[in-house]
Image (cartoon, rainbow, N blue to C red; front, side):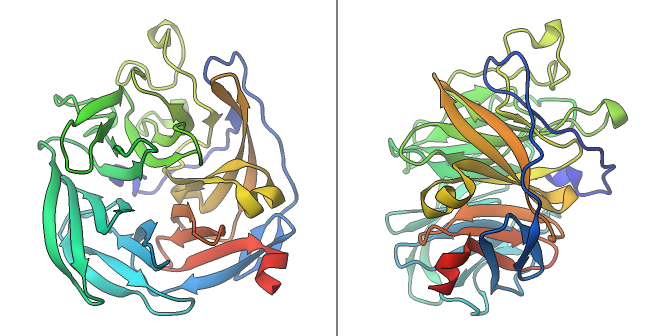
Amino acid sequence: MDGRRLAALAVSMIVLVGCRGAAAPSAAAGPVLADIGAGLQGPPGLAATVYAQGLPKVSAFAWDAQGALWMASADYTDAGRDGVYVTTELGASPKRVIANLHTPLGLAWYRSELYVSSKGGVAAYSGFDGTSFSRARTVVSLPAGLGEVNGIALAPDGRFWLGISAPSDHAAGTSEYSAAVVSFLPDGTDLRVEASGIRAPVGLAFYPGTSDLFVTMNQRDDLGEQTPGDWLAMVQAGDKWGFPDCYGQGGSVCSGVPSPTADLDRHAAVSGVAIVTGELGSTIGTAGVVAEWALGKVLRVSLEKVGSSYVGTVQPFLTGLKNPVPVAVGPDGALFVGDWTSGIVYRVAPAVSSEA
């Protein structure tokens, strides 16, 4: 979710699906959603529980080697009131361990360090004693004039990938890092632009066991009924997505621009993404799971590999939320969903697993 999109959003539904190089998108209605617990509606066969609550403005998830859930909070005011919290078990109250952050939107554990992406760059924290970290270092320092510094993901080759928004709806800014997906080594060296021309690359997730990176993209939000839908897309090194000239409107100005895997709702403020495989994937099918902040729902995008691309189909997945932001698959294979407004973290798993 891009911070400039937190104002009231007009809602109009378009569910069109395409793939890289695809000529025509497709869509499917999906299963009828039913009560799955904890006030949520989802596909039959799933069970939802409240894992944690009381976390203000939850914006990102990560798990450490011991299985503890780490969560960022971001109120998008850039007033330095944000932080990072941890909870170690079901029902435990989140405990704040890092304070005074500015819009942290990405978390990732690497070895014994917690990487946090927030306004201005990426920092790494180490030496956690159960209460606080003893050390913090700047990994990447970014120039002023960028939009939000968004989600972060660790690639199989050991590089971190990071999404950075443009500073406005219609301008890319002057920095090469604006409206781009960048990558860098864990020590912060070799920072480079991997893909450019993306107005707001928000959530990032690698397909398990591959280097295929999926990114949620916020489109322009200042065009009324002409606003295109937000996207889920596979992003590759060297991609040029065309913003600000091309923003999903089609035509000659978008010639040669990659196509998204899924065309999502307009004005959706699409945010987190997770790739579901394993036991949960056997229940709902291998898919990308995407949160739409403004519409209070989570979508399922099937992912079928065709050559070097993916063909997707969009279906409704979870409703009953207020404003979901982070979605992630936990170490137990369950899907975790954070509701930014209610401060609730939900755990969604196959019903048989919940009863075992």
